Image (cartoon, rainbow, N blue to C red; front, side, top):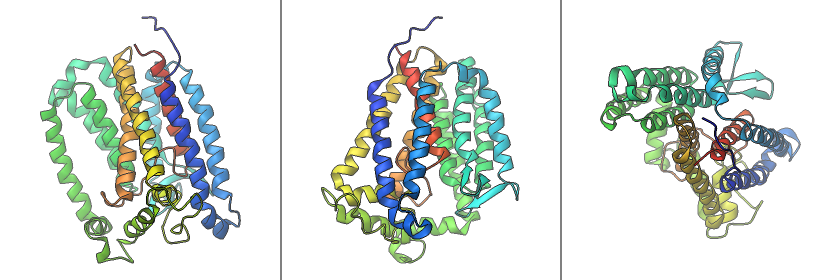
Length: 365
């Protein structure tokens, strides 16, 4: 079948570039004080963000102009490479420990997170697998268990690092693909029950996770310990009011709020730009997700539809978890805000994925 190609979805492209621009500005605003103290250069994180944003935009325009069907051909190889990297990162001397998790490969300040690449590798492979034999997915043992087992294996390797936030995004995006492919809700509910039991087991197995849960329920019970991040985040959001304290005028970034340029950058946005600035970011993300789901619905083939749904799911789940943590709805998980937070390979990879989504939109009916 010959597919007619048109212009990409400009609303999706525009919202992506606006979010990226907001991210670059806010990374500088949130990190300047810390960067000057730790690196002697207030522009340290801005330079990194600008570099990876530029690389990501180049990658996005490349994938936007590359027929998405090519990823179907190489999906199995890409997934295999992702699994190799996930195993390699667990080997002492190869994997680098940062923030208490052995989840990085690299030298010095440069590094990549294999778990970030696994999210995209799994989305591509599941889209290919489930688009080739759609009827099977309605059968629990023959159709549903194999992809769930594959996702469970990847999730298990990520939890060995450990990195619950990235693992949750992987599972959320994968389940959206599986549901979109035609899985029965009653079957997925069985998996949900097993997942809930496993989640309780993970909490019991690691005392620090239990502390995060108790801190989520009552952060003021341990204000200088497990509840510190949640409290400081709320202290940032509260004074922002309607219009904020002004760009660059945050108080919490002065060594009060941990990770102001990454996990809690939305707190700084709310503090400096207020309810209006925070709402603008949410509207742009809503626009991006809406246009992405529209692309999934109108894609010309099943592979494109599932691939688009998976990418949108990856973005949406990550946004929901990050902002939920920032405003105190979820326990602290340590996950960044897509396109906004300071990042290296994760930012470039996210823009690459959105480029694929934009390419699918060029063939949508």
